Length: 72
Image (cartoon, rainbow, N blue to C red; front, side):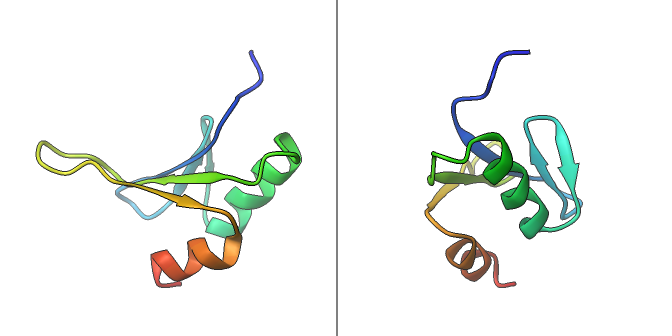
């Protein structure tokens, strides 16, 4: 499997977080996953579930900002 280039965290409809096929219960676990896999890349993309009229991504530079955006 090729090494990922981007730190994408897909927010699932059930409230869990998917990072490159690995599902995490919390945003902290998802950030820890990317910190281990891509330690030199500080930009993380939170990707919300899409539907026909809504496609939304937030660019985060820290776990604190991601938690603030998610209201956690």
